[in-house]
Length: 239
Ligand code: 1GP
Image (cartoon, rainbow, N blue to C red; front, side, top):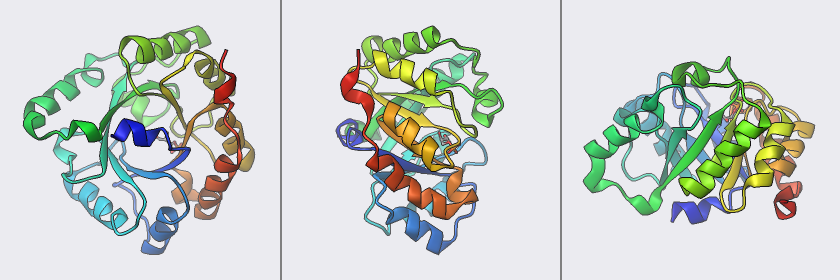
């Protein structure tokens, strides 16, 4: 089950099919000791560029999952599929509509044991994903914790994803989400470029997602695996 395997993810890379990565950089990413590679992005994602990247990642022993942002880009035979549900979107399209359309199209072939929903809360108003999904990013900690409880206890989602895509986020927000989650996994992603950031979010989140850094500073991106994995998550002291 993908939801079971996700419980072992401490550090993951997110690779964008719409960006170029050399073979040697890809090899280093895939053999870095990261727990999984997520293939997905916000714009310019097509079936062709997704399949190309997934096939390249599949050459390595690392788990590869596709995050579905467009139903037309779904690649069969991947280890798993992550389905974003943008909880603070201003449009139903990103909460249930796109998902319903995709299930209507692929329903009979979906390997549900390898599918997991990610309950996103998008918090960087300048990010492409925030603009696309019309996310309501002006949130207080109480708003975020309510989304966390909604994701975990009402929708029974396996993960809450605190998404600051492109900028380093507010540690207080991530810590607040941490306190209310008991079963759902807490993903953090956004702007990690330095050791102190990787360790700080590694303390709050169960799973740390590193994206842009792979393209901006590949050596630091590789180091981020160790920074996160050496850090103990605060998960045990939830109150
Ligand atoms: C993006 O959360 C991921 O969806 C990672 O963010 O690209 O800013 O590292 P960055």
